[in-house]
Amino acid sequence: MEMYRQTFAEINLDHLAQNFEALKRSFPQAPFLCPMVKANAYGHGDVPVARCLEQLGAKHLGVCLIEEGMTLRAGGVKADILVFRGFDREGAVEMIRQNLTPVVSTWDQLEALESVAQKAVQIHLKFNTGMNRLGFHVEEAQALFERCWQNPRIRVQGILTHLYNGEDAIDPKGHSVDQLAGLSSVMQTFKPLAPVVHSLNSSAILNSVFIRDKKAGAHPLTQINWGLRPGLMIYG
Image (tube, rainbow, N blue to C red; front, side, top):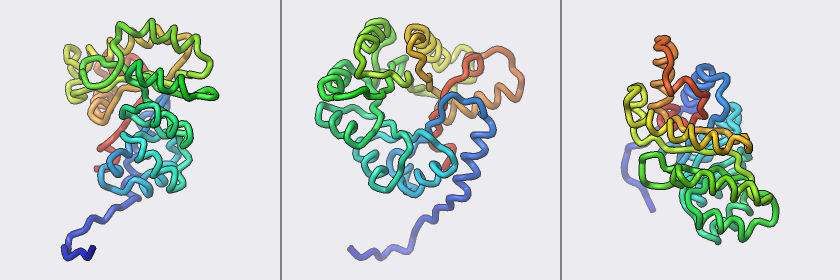
């Protein structure tokens, strides 16, 4: 179809690179760093953005849909790609085929993977600590640990939660602190499996930098070396 509009967006990958390198310098000891490239990299072009980040050393990338992960694989992206949205048995088969890493949020999803996995599958487990959208309940952690511990085809690479208001993470009495406390308890349950633990989105990352630079003392954002999932902050 012919386009008659004169507007266009020019994406400068050098600026993206500067943002990502600045983030890495701020968190040289981060145990897990997964820049999000969902929704066509927030409209910036998923394949070129993903390949740029990969060249800069990104070992993990996050997408929402299986189809997004497939697009990256077709574009030559080799990094570990986490798929955060739900899936069924057919989706489990495709993720294994495409070497995508499922973020598992329900028992049904876990069962789907167990039913099709012919060899060990790396997964991340998402816990609902307050957003009430996706994820296992914190109270299910022990049963979930035992299930995964007993199944050699399921390997828990990471556990995570989603902060629904990362901007309040600076407040010691805020909702984000409560969410991090919930994830901390899950972390103790899964300690024998030694998974990475990631929770900080762009807002929480920036707040943790502020707390650290101001030497504000003990704070849940900085007491644990949380894994990072930067989104918009690497684009703007």
